[in-house]
Length: 551
Image 1: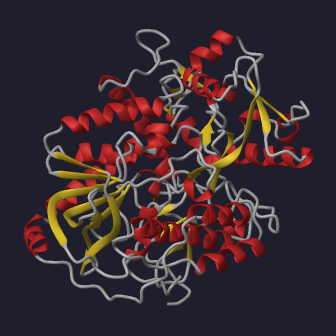
Image 2: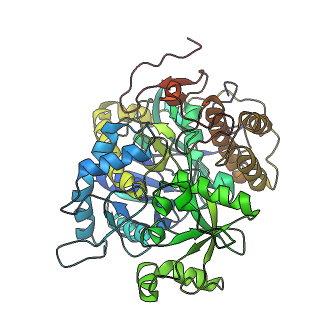
Image 3: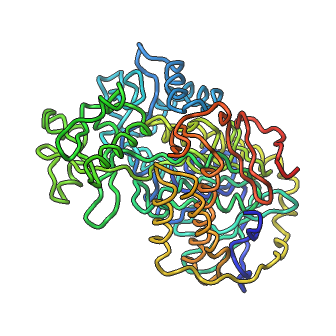
């Protein structure tokens, strides 16, 4: 990927407007809003969101947030479970930060208006999910993500120092002498802007929509990762894609996630023949980590020749189903299926990207002035496989840390900020224009990713997928926003396939038929960087010099 051009646009727009702020946040989910609210305590903040703020992966999250709040539980046990799920690659320092900050943050979110369910006036009701050794899932029915993001959105809209830019498309990060100073973006009316900032926080989410069938929003195509890669940031662990075991395919072909909590409350998985299969596949049965459940479902589907298995809740009290899963019940009934009386057809679908832009524990990336948080980032906290309900927690914990670090950076850079704001970004080296993206590029990209980079992979298929992606356009015209999206999405897809090709083992969310066992040789983190050969690091949470093969 060394020959990729630095910018997504084949030529600069004819008109560019400059707008200035202290901190620019790209992304309007839980991580981005948390970072913005933190930085806005002492700085002016722009929040750029690709669509309406209510349309983020954070808002779709159902199950809840993990926090050790029970007297019989502890952050230490939460860390231990996170390490087990991460299959040997979880950064223990990152996991410790995550678990230790969780309990107080849950209480803070409650005081800020998130209506977490209560066991009584003094205690949260705590759910159980796969991979957890205790009940520690704080939740708002099966719509926890929406409850959290709604509270954050309300705060952001009311904050006098936060300026919300909804419906904007960020295309490229801008740099000056190696330092990130903002982004090039297109507003909803098609006008192009340089958004110049003292510090930039990338919180643009994951890449599940690359696979077509996904629990994610359609905009979750990993565009922020592509922007960071082109700018020269280090990208880590892209081979580790988590497929949620239980996603219902709607009549229109979209994915609707059936929360892990459904299995935590007693739901069982059966093949289409009626046979329960997970106890024979893993002693933890339906509560095994997601990668194991996903492979168990794939094995059952292969045995029966079916494209799904059945998630059965019908043996549970109907009142319990209605109480715990009101959103799921309502949505499924819209599709003509009643989960109280009928089993739910489910199959694995792309859900979460463990990899992303490499950061330390403050959210700082390898590029000065650029910070990242949430699913777009990779601290190593999830290792090779994310533990259930650690994602919203990661957004809040590391979104706050990134906001604090960005604020400090912008304040430190204050003496130089005016000169940066008064300069125009230098003209770029323009590469020859590429052919436009095909009209049905989303379907074509999804077919490549499903065929060659899904839950079961092998070297030959990954090689073929990579070759096909090299034919994808590398740049697009400024007047074609969909083609620009295609360019960025294809870069992120190539990063996933390249990393998966290099890792010759199976671990966590990465499973190769030709290397079905884990290997100590590969107990490390893959790092990709533009114009450099891929490298492997023992730890991600602290930045140290990387030994690249090309050096």
